Length: 426
Image (cartoon, rainbow, N blue to C red):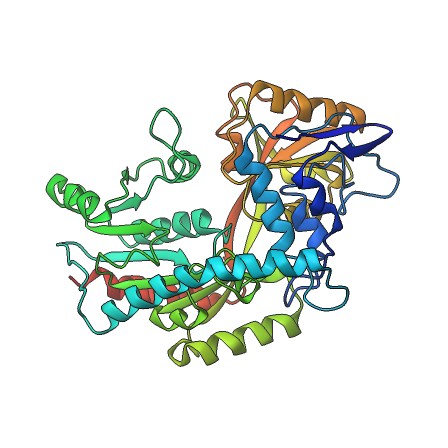
C-alpha cells in the first residue's frame, strides 16, 4: 500500500491509488462558507496542507503523519470526494467516484426506509422499560457535540433531585472495554453510573435490576429505535447540519432528513460559528422537515471555561491569550475546536488532526511535540476527549474545558421543563 511521504522542502505521493485524491476540487461547506479544505485536514496530513487557521508566516510541521491502516487512507479519500464541489470543474474521476458512492447508498437508503416504515406502522414496536428514558442523538455521522450535551442533561436531572444513569453503545472501545465518551463522561459526571452495551435494552434492564437510578439517558441513540423513549432529542451541528445532503456513503446522513420529525426537540450546536442568516435558514429548513419542531428548535454553543493539564492542574483560559499554540484533535469536527481556541485569543500556529476516535501512540505524541517545537508553541491545546487517551502528555499539553450554553435562557428552560415532564412518564 502506498504511503504519504513528506519533507520540510515539500511533499509527494508515492505511486498508488491515493494519488487521485489530489485531483479532486474543493468547495465551501453547505450553509457555512467554511472551506472544505479545512475539514480535509482531518484526513490529510497537516504537513502537506498548512493550517488554514494559523497566523501568517507559520510553516508546516517538520514530520509527516503516516497512516498505518487501509481504513484511514480510504477515509480521507472518501472525505475528499463527498466534500468536493458539485458545480464548476467536474472531472471524469470525480463523477465516477460520486456515481460509485451513489450506487452504494441505494441499498442503505432502501434498508433505512424499510426499517423506519416498519416502526411507523408499528409492525416493529419499541420495548418499554420500567424507567423514564431520555435519548440524545443525531442524524449524521461525525461530531455534533453529543458528549457535552449529555453531561449538561445529566447535570440538570441531578439538580432536579433525580438519579440518572447513562447508556451508550461503546463504539470503538479500547482493550479495557471503554471508549472516549465513557472516559470523558466519567470526568464530567463522576457520580453517574454508565453502562456500555450495544444492546441498550439489556443495559436498561440491568439498571432497573440495580435500582440505583430513576431515569436513563441514552447517548447516541436516535437511530436505536428498539427502546421506547419519553423524550427524543436530536442534535445538529450548525456548521454542517445536513451531512452534505446525502445518505452514507455519498454524504454523512445516517437516515433521511425527514426523520427529524421524530424528535421532540432539536438542539443546534455551535451556532456561534455560523452567521445569523445561515442560522435562520437552517432553522427554517428544520421547521419545514418537522413542523412540530417550530417552537422547539433551539440554539446552543460550547463555551471554553478553563485549561486542564495532564497532572490535573486547572489554569485560567486567559493564559493562552496571545500565546502561540498547536491544536491537536481526533474528533469529528476539529475545525470547530480550532475556532474555540481562537475565540480564547490563542495564536494558532499549527494543527495536528487525527481520525475520529484515534488511539494515540507514543510516535503520534512525539510527532505533535516536535511540531510544537518547530513553531515555538507555548501550549498544545486539545480536547478532553483526546486528553483522556494520552497517558504521558507533553507538559505543554492542556485540555480546553467547555460547557454547554444556550443562546437564550428561555431555551434552556424549555429543555428543563421537557426533562421534568419526561421524568414523570413510564
